[in-house]
Image (tube, rainbow, N blue to C red):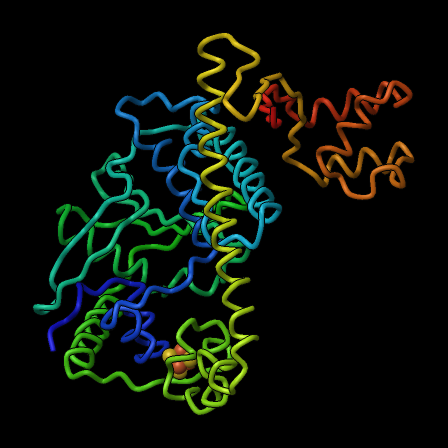
Length: 379
Ligand code: SF4
């Protein structure tokens, strides 16, 4: 068979982890479930692409950066609204810190989200590099952003991802790579390595060719591994686990003669799916209505069955929740606010009996947001 698509760092890694999983993903084209950590990483990456993607050496303002972040937020894969909100706030805090540090030393990069495509002994290879900087002597610096909490330091000197990026830059940009950087965003720390040696580049070239040959020979044996299989979306289809799931067929209730149970399962699943779709539709309609009322300067409007009213709501957003908790504890009010959720801290700020110094320190930690609030009731 032909290669289903050019190889990339992630597809080579996937093949190395489990060839069967590679087959499900790239040959059979069965998508994996969305994961919140990918969505979060993608959202932060697009904000940074915007930050460094400007045409003149003046960085975007913090406000513009955060607006872009909000606009391009990827909401897939979260286990609920509170998890999504937590990640959104975490990304916002990270971008604020990033802007504080790098608006000062801002320089236009050579490339942002640089896409490269090359051939290694006839094997097509493709990738995207977060950022490529150019030193005054013309040499290049490759930067890859990492949003995960931990970064294994051992990786920096040998990681094939950076080796592949070096190959991509040097083949296509006609300049030598001087340095390779994993930029760990949660700590704002750059972990630097010098350019890869020839043996490391040759090792990756061999790996690319070997992987391509194995795929073209259709070598897709499963490679079970406890940690990898645990999170694998293809377990139900996998030959290794098929027998385990043989007793749990896709329609167990029907198969075991329990049509009532099967009907309830389907009823519940369909209802949840409809509720999700209705929620998304309501959010869109609400946003359109809010903006139409604001444009016309109305605070109330009537439909045939409902009345809508628009008011202004004030809420507080806190990026550094740890600090908020410290201040509350210090003021001896830990029992009042057991967890620093924004509405509870808001109550504390609104309470006239709250100590003025605490109120001032909490206000300094948060942002007071005034936003339109839409209410609807039947006529
Ligand atoms: S369940 Fe394990 S062996 Fe099967 S495809 Fe997934 S990773 Fe491979």
